[in-house]
Length: 119
Image (tube, rainbow, N blue to C red):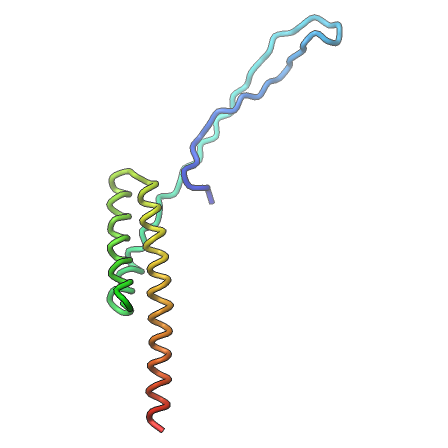
């Protein structure tokens, strides 16, 4: 996995350099460049997860907020602003996690209340 925002760079590597400290005549300096190109993966917008949280578990409107941030992330990605898209996608992911956890907790509490009140 590549770190986000990593770009290709050229790094000079010096070879065959003699500064003349050994008493031998100085030779020419040869510089070799190595270019590393690494493609970056586009940031994730978590739109499907946001839709599921919006439709199925929407406690405190967290699913709606996650959906809004997912759409903003997708818009930023299409505009070419990968930093902004990554920020909005991260916020959408955090809201989706909160909505999923709260939805599961509320569902479990609801099941416990139903089973204990039936006795």
